[in-house]
Length: 321
Image (cartoon, rainbow, N blue to C red; front, side):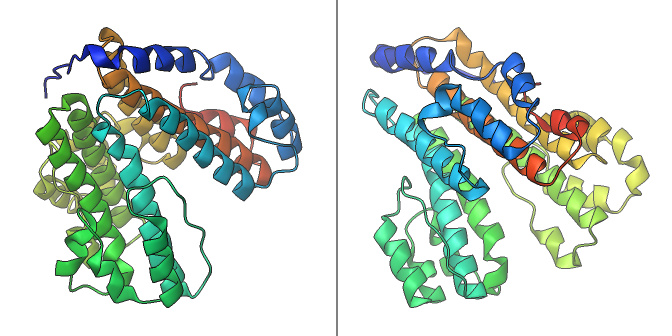
């Protein structure tokens, strides 16, 4: 898909702010320094010496850091959003918050456990809190577009997650086409392709039930029937298959941590074309995507230290290193 920049001089102020924020993103040298941490306390102390020192303390647990990073991202997004002439492209992140919240409500009701919801999505938090507290699963069917997909679903609630994720992709692709966000559409299409290869891997290697063959996402460049055909071949032949070769993931099929890293790095590379425009939404989308990846890296190192993973494994999972 060819990318056409949506030039708009009214983005100039927001893009200027984004350029300044981008200069504070971690470099490979920064990640190497964080990898010298031997414990989570060491990691927290190193992070306090970075711009995250305003956010993180050395007494934080994994959950504390996760929550603080989410709100850190949202606070930056809210500040930048005030400068934007249009903001629908940020639904890529806002819908993601809604998706996570709906999944948590669903999990909380099914497991009878308490769950924490995040502000920042498009669905008012009081609506989701009300559903969570009433434990009324059927209320989830009355959520607005794009989550209204649940109104048509006859499957048991434990399988609703797939349909919610499909609604996430479908809603954003429709929004991208409507607003001529070609870079966002390209990101989503590629993401669907890469998510589908992960689904195929789970079905093949984790021995998922046969009904999971229905749960590939539509909207990618590779037709779902190609993944189904791949499932009927020996795993040893996947590396040389046309599907895997097109996605460029053949060398990482048996290395889950590295596969996740390479998938996200390929999406970062796609977004890197945003550097060729100074007056559009593209650099802003690129920045917040990379900021999310930075947060994933921090959480990956934190959890890796908690589980005492070897330094080689930690290094192999850091995106951008």
